[in-house]
Length: 355
Image 1 (cartoon, rainbow, N blue to C red):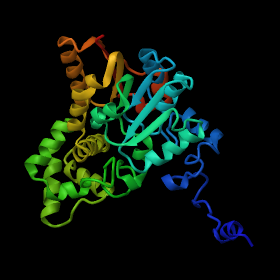
Image 2: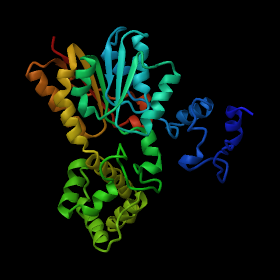
Image 3: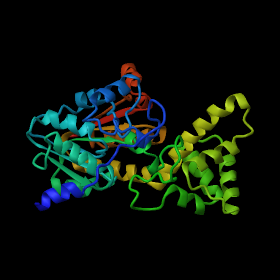
Image 4: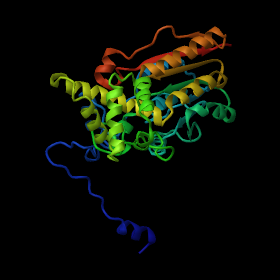
């Protein structure tokens, strides 16, 4: 028997995850959604319902981005935030096999899947270079690759990160309270909560997400820390918020808890990933990475990000670095928001490098 046949025989058959009821409920049970290439009918059905399939990300403002970037064959571009690769793929299509795309991401888990997905679609290293690095390092990438004709940065967390409970981005399912885009570096949100001071935590919730109940939530978390009943999972974080908001009238409490969960998880994510500092570095280095006449589009998802982008573009235009910047934000169409509810908070701003 050949070695190859022996290996095939020794490899055990992997059964799909079994689940109770007619439809899968948990992330790992949704095996069809986690294999979009194989179960396209299921994917389309989920999207038509206004949901995002598990393990997948639906790119936002694609047409608006492409209309602005005006990509031409032979150009060199950069997707600063690769994610699921949807934007990258559409930009590659515009190159028509001529020129080159670079793409960056810090997530060691998703970058491998996306690279294979794009390779299977015919985009190999001859036209696409993928680097596992933070987009704050755009200056180093430009030094190596040369300046870019167009750049895109989509600052949102990808749906496949949000939906996977093992990553700790959602309060809807139990999992470790992690929230790191790169789980191999830095400290998790749970570790951060164990060592943070009351004043620091209140400031984090207020500055990163405008949380109105920051003091009440911080008080509960500090009480848990003192009794060594640490907040270590997503559900424990939700329970701490529920305890803090127990004074809210019962009719309003469920919605108040939901919104505070969204804000507090956002605040923790921004903190453990140093998102504002990273964005500030990127915006500072951005003009030098663009060729004269080069175009950049940035998608933001909350007011803190949008303020930083707006200020940087306005200052760049005043200094003569940019010849033109967007005066108003571009938002996804009502049709897109109906198809993909996660697009609702998106704002797009753009700038053109001076010649």
